Image (cartoon, rainbow, N blue to C red):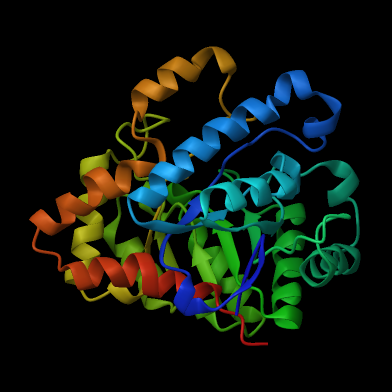
Length: 318
């Protein structure tokens, strides 16, 4: 069973999936405290339009990996899912820029908080998350991020909810993440190592694939945001190499895109951001999939990456 914002979903109903996206990225409480910054209603109308266009392209599900500390809004996601007919899976867990009031809690308390959201719902919404998100940044593991990964591991073992991560691929932090999960005895098929396509090192990418975890090529958009990671041509080339090497069973494709993200993108740069990716969430469907087909990747393989793999990852057997 897969847990969406609308409730349980049979895994054969998941369909073509984008497994690492965002809609709004702000800060905790912005939807109520600072509506003039959050622009919730305006963003919702825009999101409805974009998600209906996604539906027309064959996308049926999206994992929104926005956590509480970057403005998770489950009621917003529910309204968007109901209006677009796209299944949305939301997240518990945290990003690596963690608020002290949360990070100062004990590992036991944080584990309990993750489990409570999974079992009872987020806040008073009753909406349950279908994934646990944790993250490491460019500084690698700190005492705080270690604690979050341990709490996420324990919450997974208690509930069966899969874990998706943010990594600093240039520092190969995905391997350290896997070491922690493996140390807890977690079946790594319940783990997705995110932002792996930020690495140019095919050996590193193959190590991740050989671990048994899912490996996300989830920054697939036309122009590199930061100017220091592979361009789109190199990302698709590495993806094609991994497919040719027999790793299609563990790969994901997504964009890590958002409609409104003042947490990461100053509003004055929004026009430039649109120039970087005028396709938004549609880039994979419109550009990447045809590119892979031109490289003689079979449609069956693309379906495995976009349909079967996310369904296996998200399915909770407990």
